[in-house]
Image (cartoon, rainbow, N blue to C red; front, side):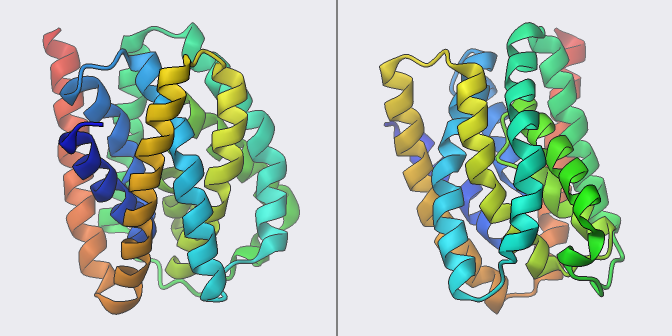
Length: 245
């Protein structure tokens, strides 16, 4: 495992643990920076988030921030959504996936930058049907683009005026069903990629623990804005490269 991959894992894991946004940067880094084939990078990224989900769930559970009933309804939609997203990824061209990923990153960045939500609502107030539909959308989009789930779920929940820390806590848990269902959908791994994905996931898990502590100690609003600008820059770069090619 290269030092660059370790650094990448720590950065994305810390961002996932602190503000929920960050895992979406993993696929572009694997594809553009490390030369992985795009479909492989997406599958590898999806599997690695199983481990960030395990550690993130345990960390936020100890803080008393997780509503298991809410997570259950989200998972009911996530499982079929992630499977369909993985199968769709294999059927689409690289250009379509890159464009979808760039749009996802850009939307997430813009939403994070300009969101004015005061976070007055709890996740459970959304209702079971809305949670299932949200899970279906999150699972499909996450597996399609190779992100763990928080980058989709957190901005949407915050747009719905859900408390930021509650949104991040829920997003930690959903990484696990997304990773497992997406892995079944991809089912293209060789043994070496399973091992690399697991190693990457363990490195990211360390970052999640650090990120969860940062979320409690630092100014989350300033952090969110810095990351939002970084996401917007990455999205524009991806679109630019796609147009040049």
